Image (cartoon, rainbow, N blue to C red):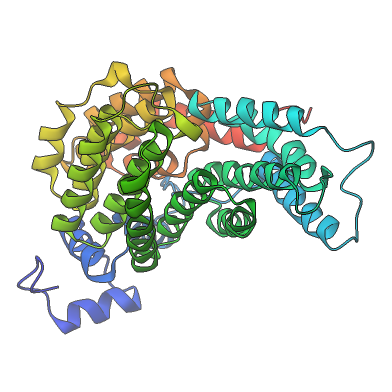
Length: 402
């Protein structure tokens, strides 16, 4: 702590924090973030919980990411369990004949389109049928149809891992990601393999396993780099570039500024080599996406001055909806770090107007709103309370459940 940022902190101070006798102030929590390799929003949540214990009954204290039953996520969880039973021949995977592979691939494209368009509610509603269908669709063992079916199954698990990571279901996301990886190895398809590897890096990051995420990103990048020397289709370039972006965030969360910059510079190089559309296998890889990751990496490194500089270089109009809203979350985080509640609130309100389903379901959005509502200015701002209420209603009522 003293070497990082807090030269006057003492062992007694830390002992008081551990016993709950004192609550670390904002500056101390930022140093703890680096020392413990924990997101500062998690430490803010702990501070808010401790204040809630001390607060008078008449005072309203908002706890970040308050747990609640989300029926849509419960159905995704059930579909993953049903798929396990089907694989063990303990369940039939559902009623009726299995869907044709062509239909499953159309469903997969549609589900991923929902993700990129920020329609998280709709994606969560359609995922269970996609996952079950991908597990029970027949194929000819060892033949080309078998490899195609495995590719669809791997990418369906990746779709689940991607959205589950965003809504804070990190362990469930890892289950989906791990299953996808296992099937991708059997699909004999380099693109599918690369896509599942970068998804695994994201999932490991979300669990706080930054060292494992960094090692996986490095190992996979080395493997794919050698492939690019032989063949460099736009799809392979996009997948490799997206892996580099995942590696940049893993490095940033480890406090490795030089490593993050190296990844981002290489990603920028490949983004400028693309000659056609940039959404191969739903990567959304582009120079604009690289710029967004520069902002995110700077925020993760707590280099707010650099983050603000990078914000002005992002071509927002070139971003798909999901990326644009994720960029707004980083802008809100910059304002949070500047203790600028008004700006952060305005940015979150803008994000909700653009993509309410993403904002209502995304864990980072929930944490930002909860943090703002625990500030003096935030407790007096009705916009935050109303946004929080709308989000809770969305998560409590799943699409198609009524």
